[in-house]
Amino acid sequence: MKYAEPLKCGTLIRRYKRFFADIKTADGESLTIHCPNTGSMKNCHVAGSRCWYSLTNNPKRKLPGTLERVTTHFGNLAGINTGLPNKLVCEAIEENRIEQFAGFTELRSEVRYGEENSRIDLLLHGPQGDCYIEVKSVTLDMGDGLALFPDAVTSRGTKHLRELMEMAAAGHRAVLFFCVQLSAAERVAIAADIDPEYAKTLDLAMRSGVEVMAWQCEFTPHSSRLLRPLPLAL
Image: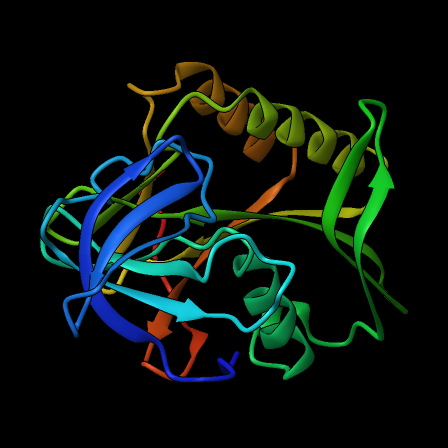
């Protein structure tokens, strides 16, 4: 996915009230911009570290820009815009870069499904049937190449696992896709100490036929894209 303009580099001062970030631009100007991440951003907001942001000319926007990437406690890049993972996975599928999704002829997003009134991130349809894909953004950097999910208790994520299990039981393909927005990630695991219920439910989901895969993102000033699959340490 290409940005309309190359991302700008600045210094992160603080992230607060979930949706706000104060930064200092390369020219020394202080800006308050939108933080597009409602999660804890554990290990992802380091005061005084480098960050990258986009600007907008949209007169309806209250803030002049959006925080896109930050530097983690371990000095790696993390893409914290949670609006991107679905787009990145969709783009990779449409460009036939993910072998496991080859052969599907139709892709839809945000389709209502399940008994708990959920919306599936991506729904593929083709001669081989339907494939339900739930995309999760992974940003919790633990150092030494280890990326964890989740970074906070996620009852919503647990609900999505239950919905995927129902789809698998009905004979459909059901996939949990970890979009790893960390530059130095080498493997992905579950943060069972943060959310033991999610870890327990994922174990049950995998034994019930839910597929799990993870791909790492590649960052440039001009773009973000899925780069390569990562091993799972589940």
